[in-house]
Image (tube, rainbow, N blue to C red; front, side, top):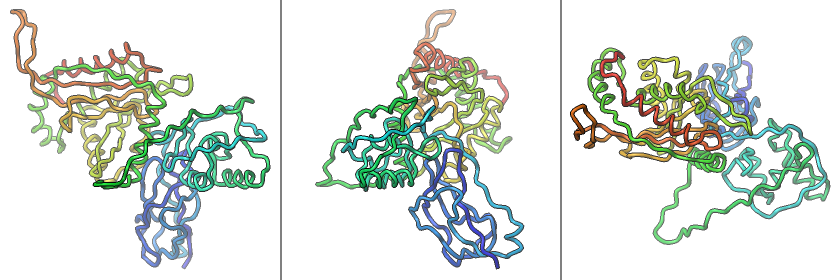
Length: 444
């Protein structure tokens, strides 16, 4: 028998550590090749770690809740010596920064001699500061226990990826502060980083009386953090249009049974909305962008994220990659597949990254319209409302008439730093035009 190490996989270019959520196997349990051994969590997604070998889990090196650096051994597996020698290590899908990461790069980093000590406490669950610098849960826990303020963290020199503060950095800082020695801080182009804006504390809420206290789960904490960060980063503006989607509704009613029989898939309105959005993005490509400082990064790929509600009440955004290269059947199949696996918690890390524009269907819950928050680092997100029958005035050659039509509201929240009202309004109107002018005779 040989002993081999189970390694913490690298889950993306910006991910340097992961938290152990749950061990699926106990010491002494048999494990098969590619069988899941444990569940881990990063600041982007939860994932399972499969075994690259068949054998016996002989030793677990870390417990639930521990934060482990990538590429470090987390368990020992006893296996056949020949199999261990020939087997290749497992590697997890690479994930690039998107939803829950907002690290900033500096052009030059130098060291100064001292830093003033502030008194504000570090937030318990927020991995981002007002300056959008990311801190791991481990660093935040150390800072909290040592009474290190967020302003001190902002000024602290980091040796990790993109100048991230590591465990070693903060422990060295604590030692230097206690001994009264010199403390390293970050400066950019010979100018010390300015102190962040004051952190506004959430008002205290009374927990006495007839109340129920519910602790947020990990995903809800990440969503809350991401939403607050987005509102701080982007200048949100929302525009609305009302669209007559009667032709769209009639076409779907006519083809849905035949579509399901022929393709084995139900056709919902979501693929039809995505198809119209893709066409409008081609007309107004600046909506498919991100902002990096003062640089506008216009994306050539059109990757549409679709917000999906989970049974837990949380939200996840799987992404349809290169949606502009797919026909309606292809989009429908991918929408249904991603939505089904999202509800079952079976999405892979690379299936929720890389989005360039997001759509959320608030009409699913009977809502007429919504004002969605931008999914950073994108610059726009569209909400589709419920489709309702309404009496509408129509212009005809014989004069105006009142008719019953299928109407819906579309809303677009956009980042006014890049997207002005003219562009945002024109894009939204173009999406409505594509939906209103739907060809009743088109083949799918």
